Length: 91
Image 1 (tube, helix red, strand yellow):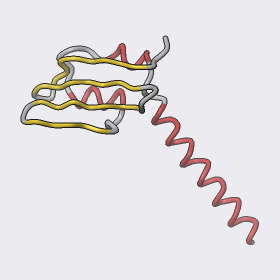
Image 2: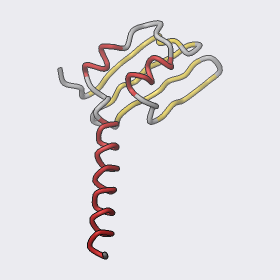
Image 3: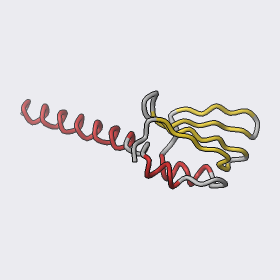
């Protein structure tokens, strides 16, 4: 019985880890290229998921996906893409 409980815990941990890693995989060159100027914030989050960080000021929002090595940064005005940049993505 104890063996089964440990197996279930191990499988649960593996599933959670897999989901977290899958989320990180959305920061790709392919997904970056799908983002277009004037695209709605909701459309961007459909492609990239929720941002890791956003800085907001009035109608302006600057959002980041990824980390210091591999990142997508998108500037929104009134929830529309105005500028996108990337760092560390490979084609």
